[in-house]
Length: 179
Image 1 (cartoon, one colour):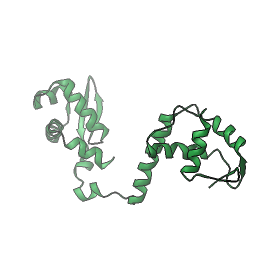
Image 2 (cartoon, helix red, strand yellow):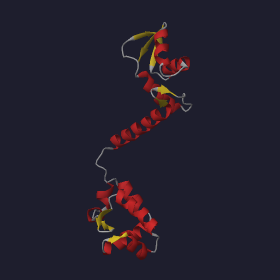
Image 3 (cartoon, one colour):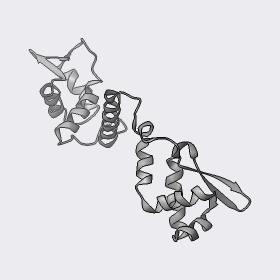
Image 4 (cartoon, rainbow, N blue to C red):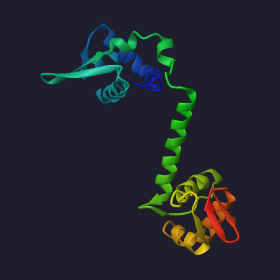
């Protein structure tokens, strides 16, 4: 249960009407639709959102699915709901890792770089992925560097230059090393 999911659910007036009706008694979709004045498909949509946020639960009874409020969630006070037990640094790191994964998935297909990103931050992420192919503390000739980069993309000159420009590798007398 993510607090943000709960707040998103509670920010919709139709969902609040549904919750208020379920506070009276557990109900099935058709009865809820009648009581709140919405179509059954709209009520079903909102119930799915409420169920995803763990605000309601459902169980099959004969021909109907009966929806019930999760009293544990509704009895939580606001302070309990908004306190995140993780440290802010962990949250930021997790968000950054998700972003990096999204960029890698967007620009690489089957281990090959589809295109070199134009945006600097995205390019940095792609280059950090490529530099992982190089061993630390090992020296490479330009030819070796080009062969490794060519496994990712045909424009090895641009990528080699960017690896140095972004400070991921260093070049000294034609010899390259990963930083």
